Image (cartoon, rainbow, N blue to C red; front, top):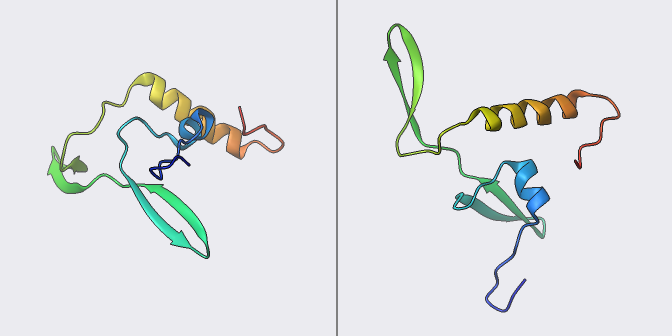
Length: 87
């Protein structure tokens, strides 16, 4: 932690958590630990063409194919017994 109280999260931790620059985080202290949690996007639910969809209240980053593939890979690693999760 620097003299201004800022903390740098290691790149590997940011990537595993799916954090991007500018991500809004909730900060709380629990049992002497500092916990950071990404703020969930605020959405409204609307019916469109017969389907209910969540619509963000404000702009959100575009979800790319690379984002989807990286998320699928992370989920597969978590569900594979003995798989390394620090990659």
